Each structure stands twice: as C-alpha cells, then as structure tokens.
Amino acid sequence: MHGLMMGDQLLVTNIMRFADRNFPDTEIVSVIGGHSVHRCTYADAFKRTRRLANALRTLGLQEGDRIGTLAWNDFRHFEIYYAASCSGAVCHTVNPRLFPEQIAYIVDHAQDQWIFADPMFADLLDSLWPTLQSPQGVIFLTDADHVPDTGIPRVLDYESLIAEQDEQFDWPDLDERSASALCYTSGTTGHPKGVLYDHRSTIIHAYAACMPDVMGLANRDTVLAVVPMFHANAWSLPYACPMVGARMVLPGPAMGDPAMLADLMDSESVTATMGVPTVWLSLLAYLRESGRRPGDLERMVVGGAACPRSLMEAFQDEYGVRVHHSWGMTEMSPLGVFNSPTRGALSLPPEQHPDIRIKQGRGVFGVEMRIVDENSDELPWDGVTSGALQVRGPWVCGEYFQPDEPDPAHLEDGWFDTGDVATIDRLGFMQITDRAKDVIKSGGEWISSIGLENATMGHPEVAEAAVIAVPHPKWSERPLLLIVRREGSELSRETILQWLEPMVARWWLPEEVLFIDEIPHTATGKIAKTELRQRYGRHPLPGASTE
Image 1 (cartoon, rainbow, N blue to C red):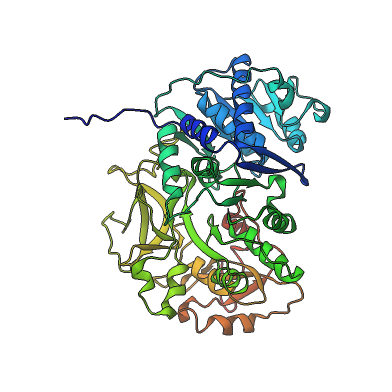
Image 2: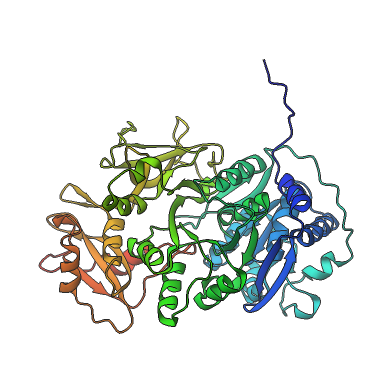
C-alpha cells in the first residue's frame, strides 16, 4: 500500500521559487574584480536567472547538455547554478586551479557546450582553445565594455546575452533524478573523475546541511562562502542559504585575501563562514598582526583537510569563534560528517573535550559509514581500531560519469571506499587518521601522517607542516617531517622533536626534520603529498641508506 501524499519532485527549481517568494529582499553581496562590491537581492538574482534561462534556449542548449563555468564566487555564478540546472541542463563547475591539461581534459570529457568564464581566465582559455573539441564558445562574465581580447572565434558577454531576454521563463517539470550539476575530482592520480549530481541528491543534501547539528543555517545568518563554488557545490551553500533565506557574502577572487575577508566580516556582519584550513591560518596570522577582530563572526566550518588543534583553540580563545570540523568528498556532494557537541560528549570531563572537537565529526543522517579491515570485515567503534572508511547514502556517488576504466572504488555490496583510514569512537565521532596512500607502515606499526602534522602545527613557530614516508632499510618506512617556519623563526630540529616527544608515541618520532620555504597544495587546498614525495621521497635519513 502506498501513502496518499502529493508526489512532488525534489527539484533545485523549488529552492529558487521558494526563496524568490519568501525571501525576495535578502541580499547577495559579491566582490567582483577583486575589490568592487556588488549588491543584489534574491529577487534580483532570480529575475536575471530567468533571463539567462531564456538565453540558454537561444543558444540551442537542451536538457542534459553540459555548461562549463570557470568562475569565482559571485552573483553571476550563482545565477548560472540555477539557470542551468533548473532549465534541465547540467552546471559543470571547472576548478581553475587545476593544471591546464586537466582543465582541457575535463571540459572535453564532460562535452561542455559553452563555457562561462571570469575575464581573468581569458589567457588560460586562449591557450587551451586550439586543443578543445566540445565548446562552441565562451561567455565572459562581464559587460560589453570589459570583454578581453582573445583568439577564441566565438565570444559573448554575459550582460549583453541576458539584457534583451524575457524576465519570465516556463521552467520544465523535470524528474528529480535528472542530472543537475557535475564536478570533477582533482585527479591526484590518473585523470580527474566526474561526479554527476542529481536534483534529488542536491535537495536532500541541502536539507541536511541546514540541520541544527550540522551547519545550522538560519534566516538570521549572514554566510561568508569562502569555499569555492567551482568545487563540490561550495559545500551546498548556494542551495542551503536560499533554502532558509540566509544572507550570502561571496568574496569573488578575494577568497584567499585575509584583509579582504576581514573587511567583509566587519562590513557585512558575517555570522558564519566556511573554508579550508589554509585560508583560516592566513586569516589568523593577519588578525594577530593587525590587531583586528572578526566582527560578529560566531562560527567557522573547516573542511577539505584536517584542522590543526592550535587553529581551533586560537579562534575560540582569542576571538570567541566556535570552529567546527567537517569532512566529506566531492563524491559525497560533499557532506559526510560534522562535529557539533552532543549530550554524551559534553558529559565527558572538560579535559577530554578538545580531543573530541579535533575529530572530523559524527555521521549526518543520510550517510551511513563503517570501517573495515583488509577482508572487508567491519571493525568496532571503539575509537582505537582503525580501518578503511566506507560510506553510502542518497547523496553519495554511485558511479563516476563516463569512466575511462572500470571503477575499483565501489564494492560489490554497495559501499563507497573513501580511500581514508579512520577510527570511530563509541559516541559515533569519526577521526581520519590518514589517507590510505599516505599512512606510514614502520616496523609493522602504522604511523598517522595527519597525527604528526597536527601535533607539529601546535608549535607557535610552525606556519605549516607535512609528513611523508621515506624508505628505511630496517623499518621499511619512516616519517620525514617537513616544516615551514613562521617569519623570523629559527626553530631547530632538536626543539621540534622535544616538542613532539610527549605528544606522540616514541616510534612516531621522525629521524629527520627538513625546513622548507613552501609546502605545495592541490587545487582544492590539500597538501600535495604526491609532489612532496617526488621532491623528498628519497631523502636520506641519518645513519640509514635508502639505496
């Protein structure tokens, strides 16, 4: 027997209609061109969205066609999100920080029909254009007076494209399983892989993001979206904020500028913000040096990489900002777990609270997770036993878009292997102990590179740290610690090892510490371990030959 409820489809279109009707005057504040501030309302943005949808039809785009974007977080990118998906096309956000050859690969692999691009990416597109097969042309996100000169045969400007279009659009009645957006993984090994989201998964994911024990977004919030819209749906913020009518602040190309972020926090009374640790480390350094404070900021969500305990404590103790750890993947839309205090965690002795907060978090309803051994046997949730982390749920990738080869990550029993190694405690808090490819196996014991990095980052003279494995004739592998000192620091190998000694197991202590000028990062802000292994993976350890 079926229930007798209405069978309305779960569509991104419904978010747009709801926000347009219920929160028409809520602002979207955008930084454009690096410094200028543009203001509009949800009503303004969705009126332009309808014009853009009509323009897409005039360009010949049909349901299922892919539309590429090379764009920052701003109001025009927001409009493309909705015009593409709600008209039945697929919004394919391209990460401009990828290598040029990767960008060319994913544009053609996705068969993007048009590319909407910020003018600052004109030179990049000019160089790639002779190699691209699928796009018909480029639409620069500007007006006619600011279109860059390029050798691309067919170029339009966004404002002229939508200027003469009708403000009304008859949105199609889509199936909720229709594809809505496409995002490619960063492709640290092999080609990037496409994750194809649908309307249903996007709506359910946005609902989950708004829950009180997750991001807790509300109408009274002003949200600074530092996490880029070109990767993993900006953690659902372009959908979740309109869903509750939260005010949005989009920093454009200034997302990595700590002074501009501090300005926006002050001028716009930002209450919540989301981004990767490298951004917040830079902001913390700027706030300390300048003596400024982060305005009305109440909470900060950190994901994309492990958050150092020192960063959490600094924002809490010095500025009263609650830092929440989160974890997910492009393949998970991306939300997986979120760290909010629970009754059980708060009942623990106060000295144990920091150990709970540093964990990635508890599962969000909609995501099942488990840890397994090498035989795929499930392991206990005791906070000590570590295993391969696997997930499944309605917003988890079921298979990659047009894979070039069979996908080994999806197991026969329907679980997605994340590639992470983790523990889960009795309260359900999951902690990533390493990437499976980054864990160090030394003398039959596992050493967590993330654990060593976090411990090192607690030293006040360390700006950033990374750990990789190097060969050892007796122990198979040993950790090599790479450190970027803070400006003016003369931190020594002996000092940092003394710092680490009471914090980690004795066999974790690295035999060698290298001080380097810079630690490379991937296009999504994670430490580029592959590049570090290429540079330092054969570094000789004291008293041990690596031959």
